[in-house]
Amino acid sequence: MVPPAPRAPSRSTLPGSVRIIGGRWRGSKLPVARAPGLRPTSDRARETLFNWLQPMLAGARVLDLFAGSGALGLEALSRGAREALLVERDPALAQSLRASCERLGAGDVATVLRADVLELLRTPLHGRFDLVFLDPPFIDGLWDEALARLDPWLADDAWLYLESPPDGPAVPPGPGWRLHRESGTRDARHVLLRRGGAT
Image 1 (cartoon, rainbow, N blue to C red):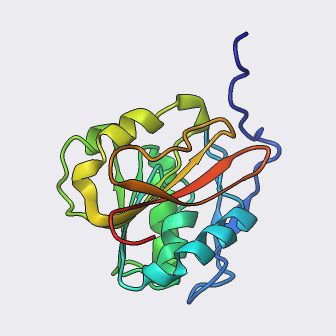
Image 2 (image 1 turned 90 degrees about the horizontal axis):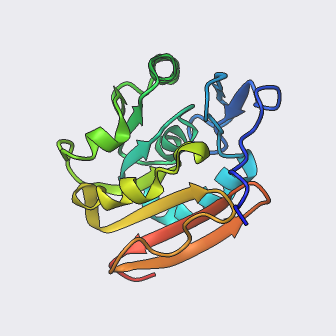
């Protein structure tokens, strides 16, 4: 039996905006465009995730792949991360991200890069990151390929957040990774992994 394709929110159910939940930009709204595959992480899931991450955020370098609305990368900056690289292929979404960063006054800590994630990951030109968000469009099935190219971008004790369909990848992506926390809903699985160091 062929498993059903991953569900994505219909255009009519996508929110018009999401809000930053905590930190210096708490309550600020980020627009959510109507774009294929765009599916912002819910407020509840982000609140849980950042409760998990709070002890490591201060001074962290963050890589937000498939950034979309920027909700994950900008939330990390709001809560104390040192800098973030937000990567988005869609030109309209990348422009919206730049506008959000300008509105928040985040230009000195946030860089928006319009690029194809898989092509970008072939050439690690931006140093190594302490925290990576990997939340690609569910319909494209890009987790395995992105994970295979990610290692040179990661600090030795990096954290990695994966968001996937409920039956998506939940195991560590290779040697040296440990599952730190996991949660899920009927629409998505949320997995936080740690490489090296103590749990």
